[in-house]
Image 1 (tube, helix red, strand yellow):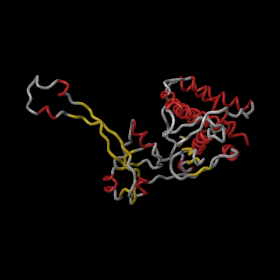
Image 2 (cartoon, rainbow, N blue to C red; image 1 turned 180 degrees about the vertical axis):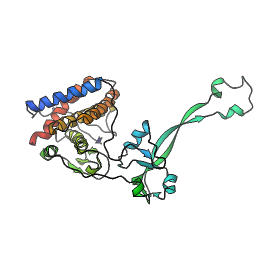
Image 3 (cartoon, rainbow, N blue to C red; image 1 turned 90 degrees about the vertical axis):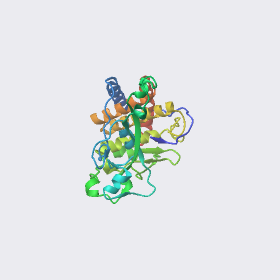
Image 4 (tube, rainbow, N blue to C red; image 1 turned 60 degrees about the vertical axis):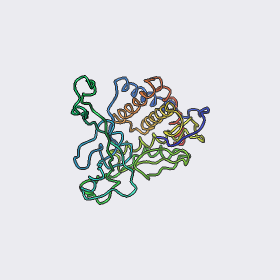
Length: 305
């Protein structure tokens, strides 16, 4: 994810990788396209907390609610209404912002029993139908007083991967990497990458793949490869979607260079790319174009390795 990005497109720097790098990139591109042709692949949770669920009922959220809750970036999977947090022995901290989740409710028109006779109201007006409603929830991390033993998550020990660390440390002039909040993004204006805490990832491979995604975004800054970057608050959805394809391809290439591009990462990358291709009206050619730009980005990052 890129936050408030800007800049004009200029000629990108030439590829600095060798034949071996290109071969890795070609293989990964072919694998991703093969997965895309097979159809949409389910998205897998990368954090140890698991999928979002209600803290009281332990019932997992589904549909669009999974996305609405996951993008908030909390590692903890448990969510509560304001009242549920109190009933569980805690409370929502002051000034915390809620997240809306939706549900469908059966609606029975009141005029079914208003005394009107047949012919005075249309048949459609008499039909029961579903209406969408929403309610507000808060994550465990937004609350205080809740039992950590009951609702907390146990994080593991993060074991750095040597080959991946070589790439991270070899990125000359890299943006600063911080772990201030539980979501990943590149902030172009201050040139830093925020990452969830390493120990909250299911596997260290997922940490590096996420970091490589944000590193690829960072190569688009004006003082690097100077791609035309757009974020949620600037530019077109088309440009933003293209940049996300580039970042995901770049992350896959860098993971391949580090020897950590395994089957779960392949599936996750393909699912992510498929979602953006839909935004681009199924323009499958965009994958090839993104792969070319991603190769330049990956070679830029590994130029010092």
